[in-house]
Length: 73
Image (cartoon, rainbow, N blue to C red):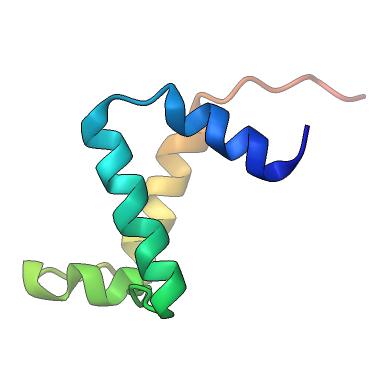
């Protein structure tokens, strides 16, 4: 099966609304349009909070505190 046949098979299985989304996406690809990726910092910029290195360290400690460990002798 070729890639085109696989794509067509998957698109045929989609509901009409999803087919419309696929068409819009492919049209954007053809036009060379793409959404620029936003960094996590940019995504969170309007939330007005800060995340410090100490905050991250504390979360890591909490996360790993109950992680099961094999005793290696």
